Length: 131
Ligand SMILES: [Zn+2]
Ligand SMILES: [Zn+2]
Image (cartoon, helix red, strand yellow):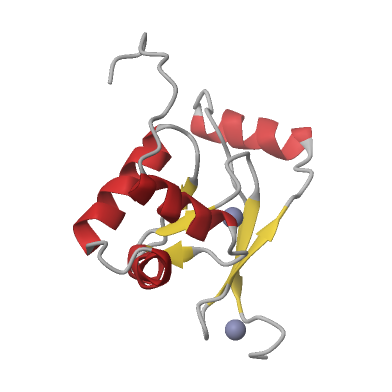
């Protein structure tokens, strides 16, 4: 897809089912978990179809993706900037909408010399059920 391509995303029945799975879950599901849930609506759907649908929805900005070091990619119904807290014991991933102070962002820019496109604060540790 080129940068000038402004077509609306095409939602096939399969893509719609995958999109609905993501939207109806507050969890951040892996492709395998999305596959399991999509099968409840479309029993004949294949893993490859689910995987391709996830890529398509991601490329069209309809879903977000969280990449964790060492773990499978997890998909996110929230597509705007937000932060995550991750439980290293049970794998729970919690959304947080934090107001990041401008001074912190400025320090990060000064230290790295980067022109940031986005930023995220990630909390690693144990959730309230696992402490
Ligand atoms: Zn936990
Ligand atoms: Zn999230």
